[in-house]
Image (spheres, rainbow, N blue to C red):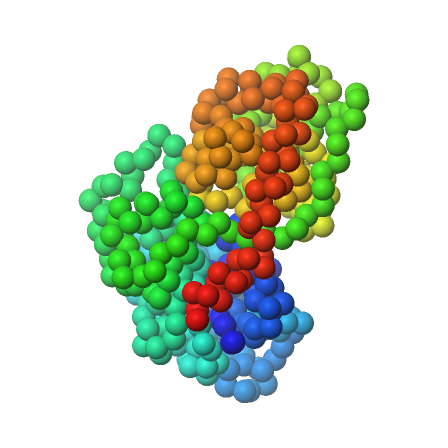
Length: 407
């Protein structure tokens, strides 16, 4: 089958889990014998290296608003979008942009033209912020099968995030009006995939996807290397892997880590990632040389980190859906300590595949980190359960489920 994947971000502009999941699905579909192409965005005034020069008109060069490149297996269309630099604009301009994003008729016609030319059997949409919320209408008008994969709350609130302690932000009148409009624009695709029951329930509460087939299917995860066993007198390494933003709880993690340092001097905290909160986090870390900042890591480097650290910590202060990093840790046999928010508890399963701590609670996180160091046999059992659990989330199983929904 010829299948289109649509997501607002993709390489080389990937930031988080949704982009990683889109890539895993794309590669899985190609491996299963399908022809796949991707529609995504690129920043304005950013020259993207074109490696495949035929555009959808069959001409030699693409128009400035649309870049097209070809990897060994994928054709990727890049549409210019201000989404990449949205946080740099004043709040008033961001509000205007969000209104434009909902009714972006220019991208509606661009995407419709690409899909009509491609003659694909199905479209799998992901995050559409920056591409335009008229995209589902373009798919309906062409009578193409539409599968939507929900990653966060961006259809319920434009921030896409629900912060701990600010749960009522999605219940205000303005937020209800926004969600109601998004519900009408997206209507009811053929099927909608939610990676967690928590995310499904939040959308059903807001009357989304009433006529769609709705299933809970955790994100796929690629096989990873097994984690090395902790040896006697080895430094115990805690790992944070992800975006460095205020809502990710890095300050909380550093405070908890500093609490246990005196009792456990042979420890390190490895922080891998980039983001707008990096400088503030470095200030919080101070001159503690046991806190290491590694910056952005590629796939090989991530696999190496998962194999040499002893525990992954997810200190998030926002309600998470189905964090890709937890699945990657499970696959690598790396024990997980995580805040009990959103869909995380579904993955960790009543502390059987990982250890939950109270969100925003430095003392509780410090206690769990101490426990991880003091109880290596129990920690190993958590890793074993997580590694066994993640087998059901294989890419092959996910692709079979997706093929079933399309057919």
